[in-house]
Length: 243
Image (cartoon, rainbow, N blue to C red; front, side, top):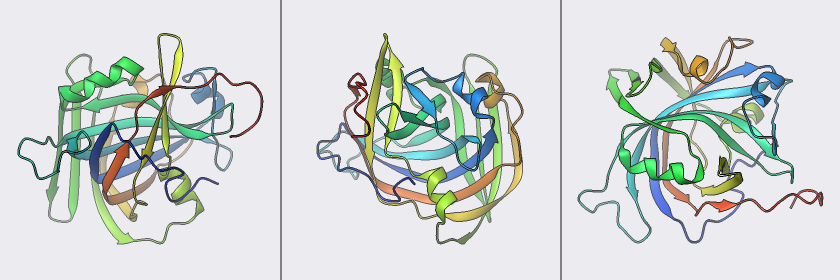
């Protein structure tokens, strides 16, 4: 079972931000299908006999280095959308593997240095009455998405809700090395959500077939106290079990 709250403190963050107006759309896939898209050092994590891939659009707010106040003029806010799956390192620690990341700000492209698969594009997030609309298209290539959701009532998260939304590290791969980026923030406040429109080609662009079933959808107003730690190469696994 994954932790509902952060597994570790990020005492010296490399970046601080808020992740706001976030929707989680998760589909089940056969584990071997998703495993083919991740590095051999990682094993796809499963829940209820399936691997899960999530489309998660949100607003990246108040992005700044440590020590800079969120109220400072010029602190950027922009839309981002992740396509990710859940993995476990051979040392036992779970995390996220990003199949693609769509971003509306060139600022984040620096993370390609550790293998984060950022794709610059035109993205938008808007609210109209009781619906929230997300859309995006890459500047290079034809991958795009359009999602309109109708957030429902807040929920008390159950086991699957926590499993699908709470991870505390991300893995990337660059120049033959696997990198780990720790993250800390408050628990997600979650609500159910209905889908009015869902059109996307990100999964196809990532090499995925049709999913095994209908998506599981959550909405969150977001978390405002995100602390991303410095990325570091993973220590080679020596077979000593979880740390």
